[in-house]
Length: 257
Image 1 (cartoon, rainbow, N blue to C red):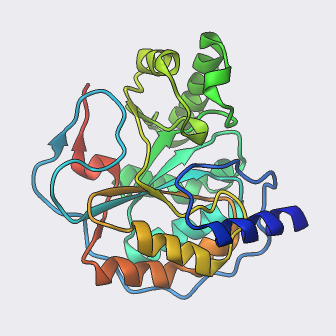
Image 2 (tube, rainbow, N blue to C red):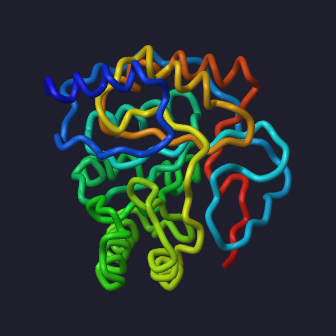
Image 3 (cartoon, rainbow, N blue to C red):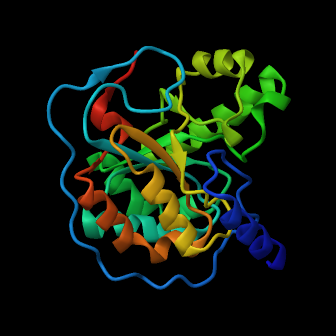
């Protein structure tokens, strides 16, 4: 824990990172108190969805005021549960990129599945246990994605296609080809990060949100450490101050089929 705290402090001194780091090892972030319910957020914008081709995306195309908060991993059951409560309390919409190995998803399946079925929360594939896919054989890449795909389908009735997020943002032509053969034709990167794959301070996280919560952005966060669970009210304030609409990818994009 001391090493994690030291690493978090070092990150806070160097500015908001835009790359994804290792998820923390622990399956729990400790007891996370439920925060007070922030004000309700507006619904997603109406109108036609934007068609996108197969290929990598890092932002939402075209003009608009939408923002896609995408939440990776799920190392902490408490943080996953707090995100679910945040969605229920405020109407927040986001996309979980699920690392299916973590027991958070089984623990919260019954609470999460209705939100997935309603479309308020979307699920994407973030592999079975978060390896660097560029260091694996093609068959091992397929195994990572297929195992997570099966888990999502069996537990939530969806498989995340066509969106997948390669761990650490690392992918290459082989990874993309294997993923596309499984229906994952849109590697989903990001414009900015909350930099919370491990332990950071709440102040640092809010600074990252102020930097990257902008129109038509895809922002990456993580369900690994408790800082974000103490910041929901401040995140809502930033979103409302900037007249942003939180959206899932499916809310605004029409991907290739």
